[in-house]
Image (cartoon, rainbow, N blue to C red; front, side, top):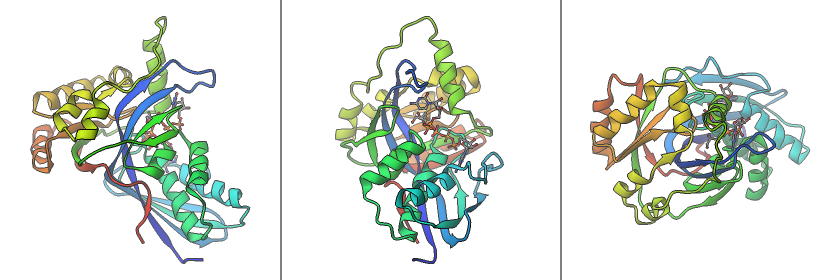
Length: 300
Ligand SMILES: C[C@](O)(CO)[C@H](O)COP(=O)(O)OP(=O)(O)OC[C@H]1O[C@@H](n2ccc(N)nc2=O)[C@H](O)[C@@H]1O
Ligand SMILES: Nc1ncnc2c1ncn2[C@@H]1O[C@H](COP(=O)(O)OP(=O)(O)OP(=O)(O)O)[C@@H](O)[C@H]1O
């Protein structure tokens, strides 16, 4: 067994997020295009007698992250041990840079990172399809966080197929001071659609074509998020922030997943830096990130 393994676990954004009517199990059918972006949590595991977790924040507030067995990353470690019937435990450290409850799959990515880290530490050699099945049990976004890149998600988001995508993109990420609960945003989506029939979700025309050609302007116009009105309803100030980015030369601007992080698509890295300057004062934290990047990977 190795002495210690560290995995880089990327944040995700949704280039499009189509949401259908709530299913009988309470989940909503999705048709989404995910992209992993270059903002990483680091998950480190070492052998131990019992599972334990320490969480550090690097630029993000981590006081809402549980450190007990309910933490998604510790649940992932326990689930992998049970899958292999091994009596192993870990001392885990998570260094968080992905905003907590930010709509960027932070907890999901930590869980994907924990699966990859423990599989390497215990030398269990889990085949990818088994890791994907365990990931789907842990949460809708977790399978994508294993795969990374750019991918289409269906089902409740857990059915992931890599998408053809050319080139790379630069994003400005506007992080909010306080997170939004994903279930609350889906509940607000249901409230806003009460009494009307919600169509089955679709990927917008033009999005896949823009990705295939790497046309940043076309991609900007094709970005969409069915949860955005719900996020605006719960956080009205986000609507002004998105509007400011669009007026200020972003190719596209939208709420990331369930929010409250907002995304601004730039022409290139230099333009992203200019856009960030424009947005200074409108959001507490502004970061630049390229995408797509690979899913959870061992780095040490
Ligand atoms: C908003 C997205 O980030 C878009 O990628 C995801 O849909 C959320 O994925 P996630 O955080 O991994 O979600 P899960 O942990 O599976 O579910 C959390 C809660 O979100 C709601 N949820 C999630 C996914 C989905 N397709 N429909 C839902 O209604 C449910 O209330 C669920 O109880
Ligand atoms: N490893 C973890 N990191 C962050 N939050 C976690 C973790 N494990 C459990 N949680 C809980 O999950 C909640 C949602 O956190 P997370 O950062 O995953 O939200 P999110 O990025 O909005 O998720 P998504 O984009 O997948 O909907 C947190 O408020 C916290 O209580």
